[in-house]
Amino acid sequence: MKTAIVTDSTAYIPEEIRIEHHIHMIPLSVIFGNESYKEEVEMKAEDFYEMMRRQKELPKTTQPSTGKFVELFEKLAKDYDAIISIHLSSGISGTYQGAVTAGEMVEGIDVYPFDSESSCMIQGFYALEAAKLAREGVNPEEIMKRLNELKAKSWAYFMVDDLTNLQKGGRLSGASALIGSLLQVKPVLHFVDKVIVPFEKIRTKKKALARITELFEEDAKKGTPLQACVIHANREEEAKAWIADLQEKFPNVEFTLSYFGPVIGTHLGEGAFGLGWMPK
Ligand code: MYR
Image (cartoon, rainbow, N blue to C red; front, side, top):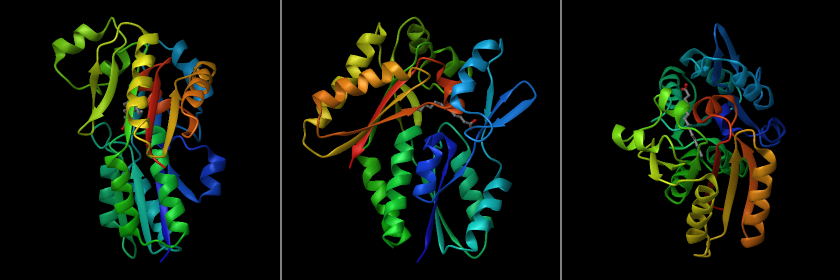
């Protein structure tokens, strides 16, 4: 049984790692005015933040079309028996639904869409785990079971420098009065039932990062071996310093440095940070 692993660009798995693990990637796009760029292919994070800073209008983002999914799945059907397609939360993007619809349209291959209910490197960890199991010849149902087990024990908290982008892009859920009261602070955010909601109202960035570290610590001290990722929106040096600090406190945890690329960066804005983790 040969299973292909597909994920979308918002997992932000670097190209060389995708190639090494035979992970197929379908890009979402970011749109500036009339120009659309496939992220990770035509637009990299390095260029994106500078471009966003220069524009008055916020860029927009789009999911891959169902046609692009069909094209990819039909190509994979020539070499594989099944596909596991791992995507950003269905509560913030139609990408997962695109994979579901295309999976129903394509013949000759079984497609198993997986809703990460999160995004970024958390989604990347699922794709890497699925790729490892597929390489070992584990069947797709078992791989899906493992991914669902990991999902039940995975966490992600993040903070943005400014809530405006999230609010304007319509990706912040919760009572509007509460959201209004958050605009001047640095709330910690997380996913609940696939959508982004405020977790706690925190006044400063320093305190927000400390609170996220504390939430991680509560889980890490239970002793389950963990893998974790620190994710940043164009703040690599600060993210590296945070990882160094975390690594010193939690020497048994495997930390990965990752980034919010153009599509997620459009909604979170520059200066956002996140910490995600799950069992190893
Ligand atoms: C689309 O246009 O379909 C893409 C919409 C993407 C919305 C992104 C919202 C922010 C996600 C934050 C993820 C943080 C994970 C740690």
